[in-house]
Length: 336
Ligand code: CP
Ligand code: NVA
Image (tube, rainbow, N blue to C red; front, side, top):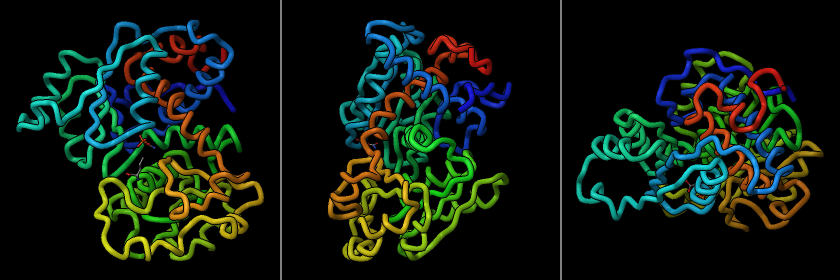
């Protein structure tokens, strides 16, 4: 794989928000993933106390309106490993819960913090925060998307199977927030994504329409039959049948039974197919134990890669022009 690519000058506005993959040029996303891979390698060859501290003196706020294990811990550890500090904010305990606007909250927090992660049901609330914050705002999951997850997922696929461009990934299950970010990733990283979902649980029309307007090598295929979707796929992905923002409507799970990823379904994928899941998993629902514990599964690498991908993301958002050099000792675009 090549060294981190040079980012197109002037294409990313300041502050460097990370709200959705569609907002960033492919070269920037490629560079973040490649930097994450370098950082992961560097980390393994160094003692934890060694290494550069490019974000020393900077503070990240983590504002989580929904439960989280991976996002919270990986952002906290990422910021600390880069030399920065973290403040965890519970919106329930903030004046936000008593009616202070998200716009004023963003303006005030920008005076204390250097970047802010928000996990919330509402994509509109995230965009409103970003519109009023003068610091980078990062999407830590909304009901509509989960882009930080995809940085880790692309890193995971590529460290196991090489470049994802031109490959085929199959999504089986509900067309949810993570599926929407996989759709954006397919268009940004240039791979084919086949989505097998019940007809009434397809991804939101807006993300499909966005994908339809993009050029490039990415392709989206919507299917009803998971067995057709996984045929010869290099990776099979699923997620919970009921996301945090979903209405657990009666009958939802019954409609998803046919989309469970089991060993019989994996047998139809490529012989060396990976299985991925952002976690938390509901074993026996969207995936069987046999698959998540089987030879296909890279789910714990995927979870670990949240840390490495978000270190690269924070370095990009906060580090300025020298972010790769400062974070990894590697000069951008030279491989040196
Ligand atoms: N995958 C993921 O975002 O996990 P958490 O909900 O635990 O943060
Ligand atoms: N789709 C899941 C992802 C959890 C990380 C949810 O939104 O609950």
